[in-house]
Length: 307
Image (cartoon, rainbow, N blue to C red):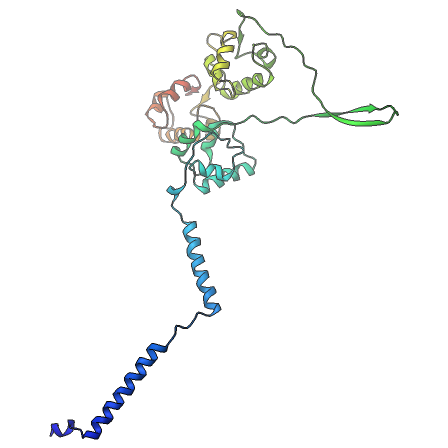
């Protein structure tokens, strides 16, 4: 019976073959003659936007290690954002420095760089040798002078108010000036020292608390080894010089880090140690802290008090 169900006449078989041929022809024709529909203008724009976003993200999230680091002398009071980034600082740290300056902050010594929020100890130690802070320029004062020409016509000119140059009397070999007690007038008597250097020596002496060695003159901005060798035969320091000390157990963080030999991180660990022990008894306790090197402690011996 099932054989009768699947049996076809000759005409039925021919019809089935024709139907299959038509179906196959339609499928082949549709495949052969169909064309890819072009993207509409809106689709093109959308695709460009997607590509644009992808490119933008790639630029925005470039790895930090692809930045070329160039270590070179710089002045934190005038360097721009790109300079800080080229020195290896992250962009947000560079922005913090710019914001600090915009609010009136100034870097007076290289150690002042350590107080920038977010700056790591490693970055500070790496950049400190390259910090070169230029002295502030003094404004030029001008005065008016009158000039009469042949027709008695009066005109006015601006002239720089520069006082007449007076020859400064200099001391000779065998005469010494105590750099802890001399004012700017006395310091200018030292050969090769003018008004600018005399003012810098006095200013540095004030923030330092006094000199314990004439070698410290090399720390004054602009006094290099050559100049120091020229002036050293004319300077001296009295025995047991009076040094203004820093109270380790009483000064605030800001007062501690204002000293040229104490940076922000060192001041911070002093405060933390003081809280932990209630009182720091002598400099040997600071020697246990990794923030202080042997050279740091040697210099600070003259300036720290532990009352």
